[in-house]
Image (tube, rainbow, N blue to C red; front, side):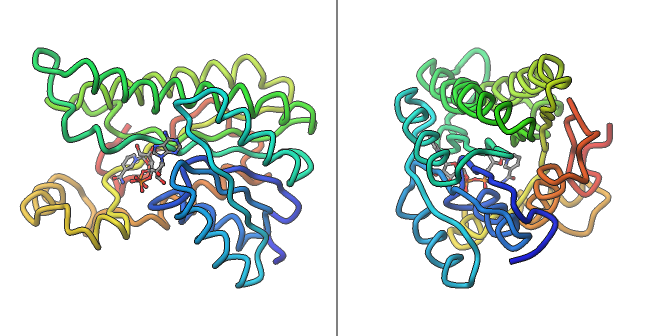
Length: 256
Ligand SMILES: NC(=O)c1ccc[n+]([C@@H]2O[C@H](COP(=O)([O-])OP(=O)(O)OC[C@H]3O[C@@H](n4cnc5c(N)ncnc54)[C@H](O)[C@@H]3O)[C@@H](O)[C@H]2O)c1
């Protein structure tokens, strides 16, 4: 496949479903060689097989971002098979804990710890595995999936918001520390995105959807392709002078 990302070697961490799967698809269709890494290796492998069958260059590798050894093994596999690295999209989050992420008084500390371990510490582990390879390639892009929740002042899910605020800070640190070495670091902060899995699972009550739509100037909620399109741009050379930014993709639901 020829396109804006032809020749780029990119790893997407958190790629089996939702936004990550759409991003792998978009990157591959724009010409990148992509490693789809996920704890759900069955899902990532199925995606890689389907995309390879359609003529793109994608393979899967297992990763648990909560486990340092697993992150190192996944990056070792990715770097060997890609022959280097030009971009990394750190998209994984443990969203199973989000429904138990209550409030500062009632919070189960195991939920708090798990959320921070996967969403923030996991991103740090991925960043420290990716950066040496990006630097060796002469520069590259590292992208994190944050959330509008970091800036929304919500009465619930304090651990999730804290993890994403921390991610924004980690991203800015990387941008300032390694910008002159050719690294760009940015976050995408999605608004409410209905993933294919959420639609199939019927997890979102119509009342929540209605409430969301009433609070935004958009006529619809987000789709995974809305986020994948921004990810592809930020991982391309079109974004070489975009560094240290949290870019909200949300139909105007939160304006900053
Ligand atoms: N969907 C939304 O409305 C929305 C809004 C804002 C931000 N986000 C963010 O977008 C990203 C993707 O979310 P999504 O909605 O596509 O959900 P998703 O659950 O489909 O995607 C998360 C992916 O991360 C993987 N993952 C979970 N734990 C992992 C671990 N320990 N190690 C490796 N991989 C792991 C999952 O298997 C999955 O493939 C997340 O960072 C999420 O916080 C989503």
